[in-house]
Image 1 (cartoon, one colour):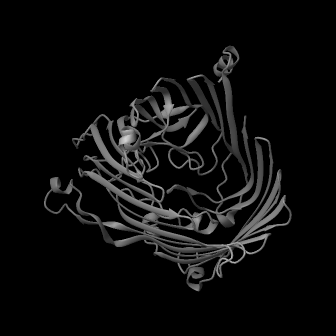
Image 2 (cartoon, one colour; image 1 turned 90 degrees about the vertical axis):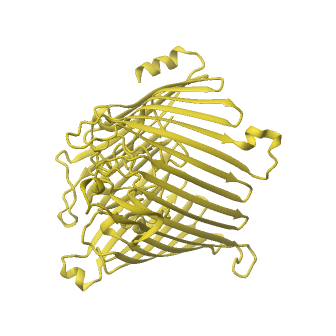
Image 3 (spheres, helix red, strand yellow; image 1 turned 135 degrees about the horizontal axis):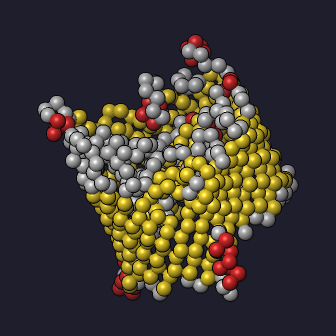
Length: 547
């Protein structure tokens, strides 16, 4: 970091910018909710990025500190200590760009390669090596990567044992053919190949040291249509997540979206079969050293109860999923649109196990093939189903309301790894409102109710946020698990409140927020990747700053 600052002063015309963020928490004991209390009582996560740019040259680094890390953080292997977690140098010369050090990258939708960070999940599989991007001709984009992935953090980044190498090529036909391309839309064709290397030290099995994957994709866009499909294939990859079977994997996703003024519709489907792909075949958890990313095909809810109690995460070992969504906006001045218009959105998604037949009765060689499957054919077990309807309307110049209803079926045994637990059937009703008292003062509130006879029973949530623009906001929320089932109460479930209050201040590039109260145990998800959050009680301080 000091070197970068020195470079900034030394080179005329260069610029240095960056950001800082931290989350710190002081933990209280709270036996009623089973709160986690670390021995140090005070824990924090902190990050600071510095980026120096001068012409076509760029270099940067990130200092990280976990002394100790917040309880339940990160999703995979533990982070501890302080040090440099990310550093790189990059330059661009004509149509060539070279990066040395850490980098994030993605091929297509990520079915064979995606290096990315979701900081608040604690997912970071940044590459450490080299990346080359080259545009030899208009409409032709080439990428090449090689290196090792970040595994965890111990006073600095710790890299995984496996090597990852890959290449991607993409043709943008409208750019490539220029005036010869006469179609209304544009077609992009892409292909990728990725290989991982890990030494075979298994005394019993003969494991492939190089495991390759490839993918092909098509993406068509026009003024109203967006059509995307990608197919990926992986050679046999015995690993801890598939029981060390020698079965190849494959995945296919298809998405179509149509939109015009006031109306939109989308449909999508995908099937994944044995598509866990990690650079260490013995990775301790599903969150470590993932080379690829399998995007979810369910709505990512933002309301507290559906988002943290029963979110869905993609099942890489076998899943068939589909989703459809329609929205329509009635215009102002129509019978249903009223003075300000009305918007209706209907969404439905479902995910099933893949239809498979287990092998293994004949001999050990057959057993090592694992199973047979019928690709893109759902099995009997339904993992997840979500049907939701949202009606949003501005009812006056100062009031806006949204009413949402959700119906969920949730296989908590598979999704959250709770063997023997019953499938959760839940209905959720949410009323959201926004009232503008003045141009600078507004109140937003949410009333949520979840009813179910399974798992933890019924929940009710009330949230109010008062904003005094442009600097201050205060918020209060209570989540009440009132159970509402004699059968669950006989099993020991007791009604519990989870109150929490917040105060925030924003000025310039700085933001401060203080929370105090209870945090219930739950699931925190970003983009279909989820981690368990433990119950906690205490004071939290968050600071973000950019310069």
